[in-house]
Image (cartoon, rainbow, N blue to C red; front, side):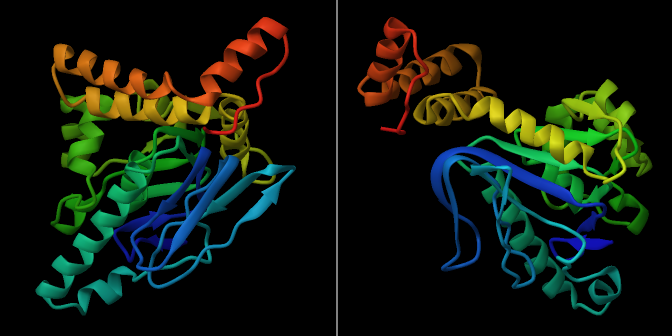
Length: 272
């Protein structure tokens, strides 16, 4: 069991975070940069002063950084000792870190193989796609502790599953398993857990591999267009799409894509 982002919630059974595309992104801790290059990688999240490693998985260009049971922040006992001013500052920093995850310029996937409650689920909600094992448990349970979700949960959960259902889950502090999470739209894919306990993680890697061959610039601006467009009316959203599309026109990758199609070969994109 690990406290996610300093005790805002629990991450059990390795809730992993994967990202796919070409970029180099700076996350919340000063001087810390998470390299995301040449295909798929995971975003390293700064928490409680720890650094996160990266390990290759089967393919040289497929790198994943993840939070697991060894990465612990402050637990609830430690939170109980904090002065109210310390709690506010702590939660603000955690919220900023989760926002950094949401604003990464590459696709992000949360793989939930165990339990993600409170801040753990808020972290997953900041990702573009969520995958979970059928046995996984998820929920925003803060009202049990007489507080509310403070890492974006009150805003991102309604956007993911609708206002009424989000209110029900937050008011009741109820958790759901992977099957129910899929039925209400909280996650995109649900898989049966395997003996290794990493079924969701493997499904997330398979998804990341689907993203790898695509044009990096196109994927990046597509995410930007979707994210910004969802916050405005349709007319404004279409204008955002037009502006984002314009960014792909002068790229070398666009010409490479046309040549590859003409020559009937896979494109060799460089993110240029």
